[in-house]
Image (cartoon, rainbow, N blue to C red; front, side, top):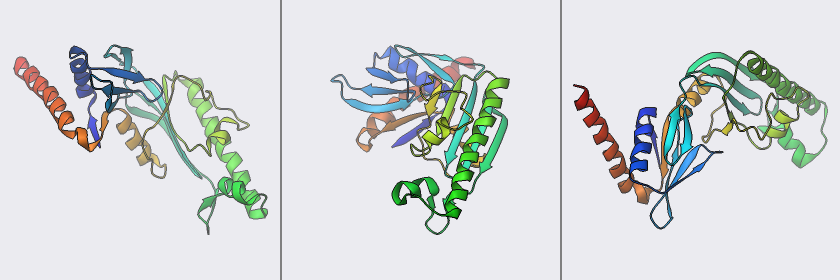
Length: 235
C-alpha cells in the first residue's frame, strides 16, 4: 500500500520518528528510509521528497534552491526536462521509429531473440542510435548551461547500455551519486507525464503492507495532531 505525503508532512513525520527514537536505516540509492520495529523487523518504507537531503539520525535539510533533471525513456519515446525549485524551465520530447509494429516489440529486444534482421530492422536500429544521441546532446546542453543537483531517471535495463554507450556521451556516469531511479511505473513519456513524475518526486511516500495499515494510520494521526496544534499556536 502507498500513502503520499506533502513535503511539510514528510518533515513532520521525520521529526516525530527522531523524537521517538524509531529504528530506521537510510538507503541513499532509493532516497528512502526503512522503518523497523524494536526487533529489527521491517515495518514500512518512507521515500523522501526529492527536495530533502537526509543528514542522518532522522534529520533532514531542505534544499531551497534545487536544480534537477528528470529523464524518462521507453522504446521510441523520451521526455526530459530541467527543473528549478519545482518549476519546469526547459523540456523536450523525442520520438523514434524503434518498435516493430506487428509484434509491438522494440528492435533491440527483437535482435536479442532473433539475431540479424532485414532492411526495416536496420532502419530501426539507425533510428535507435540517433534517438539516444539526440537525448544525450540535449542533456549535455542542460548540464553545460546549469548546475544540476539531482538526476531522476526512468529507463529499462535493456535500454541503459544504449544511453550510456552512445557516441554522444551522457554528462554523467552510471555511478553518479546524483542519479536517482524513479520508483514508479511511467506511462508513455510525454510532457504531461514528465510533469506528473515531477509532482510525484516532490512528495514523500509511505510504503507498507496491508497488515501495517492500522499502525501507519495511528502514526499519521499523531502527525495530523501536531499540525493542528501548530495551527492553533499561529492563531
